[in-house]
Amino acid sequence: MARVFNFSAGPAMLPQVVIEQARDEMLDWNGSGMSVMEMSHRGKEYMSIAAQAEADLRELLAIPANYKVLFLQGGASSQFAMVPLNLLRGKQGADYINTGDWSKKAITEAKRFCQVNVAADTSAGNFTACPAQADLKLSADAAYVHYTPNETIRGVEFPYIPATGEVPLVADMSSTLLSRPLDVSQYGLIYAGAQKNIGPAGLTVVIVREDLMGETVVGTPIMFDYKIHADAESMYNTPATYSWYLAGLVFQWLKKNGGLTQMAAVNRRKAEKLYAAIDNSGFYKNPVDTACRSWMNVPFTLADSELDTVFLSEAKAAGLVTLKGHRSVGGMRASIYNAMPEAGVDALVAFMADFAQRHG
Image (tube, rainbow, N blue to C red; front, side):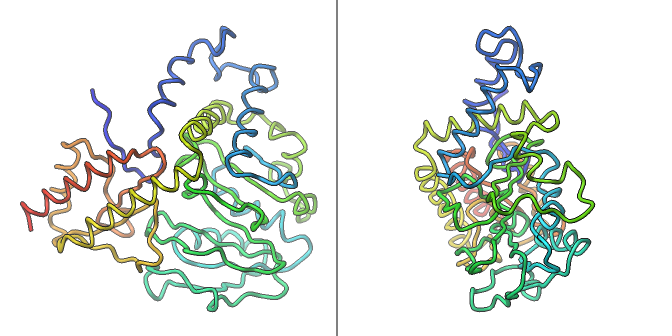
């Protein structure tokens, strides 16, 4: 059966060459006589895989030497608790910017551990825009400022990096990390679930400045202490070894294909094609302010919602799958992460034009 174009928001499609390499190495990695998933995480074979993956990620993002890279478990949702437990450092509160569903979840969890100042809240506009820098009501004594650069459900993306002065900036980059170049030094901490641009589910990448570790809230579980993981090189416990290995293959794929500068050019082009198809159709609509449209997640509605089921059925028959919008929003959503080839977006655009002509 031919592979489909999978527009899922996550777990998302992986580069085909990565899957093929993993297939070829499944029974015997590099002459070891073992599959990677069978290896001891402390054996020399796996340790070489882990070290190479970290080195490649550091190269791709030009991560400064004073930042630790952690490969953890628990998804980005565990980071909603780990961030305040590690970064409060004796302070009572933190600032959070609320621009959608994932921001809200982070805020809800942080309230269990500290006073949360919501520095901006775009819910009144149904989360269809980002607040301007001038509208951020930041606290002078905040331990950190947390935001979600890209909200996957509603397709809203910050067009700028919030300026927070000396207060560490924390970002949930689950859906944008590795989609374009990034100045890591502007952040105190970055975290990202792997299942969008990095690799399969089961792995979470954390990039944290060294001076922000080592002073956890009293009673913090050992497994929630960044310094414990950093000192153990992400192997305090058995890590998600196979997901880490696959992420390493993705990093190598990115390097071979021009790195993040080239990936940014492709991602921008894909997004522009899809938004143009929506805006010029007279049949489809995207509700997001044009300045805050996501490169990664593109929601859209049809002129008649009664056609949604037909659209999804016909799209699936055309090899275009997982286009149904999130249940809280409805309509459609096309997630076009790094591994979605431009040909996939072209196929979707052509299908949308044909569907609109026949049903408009």
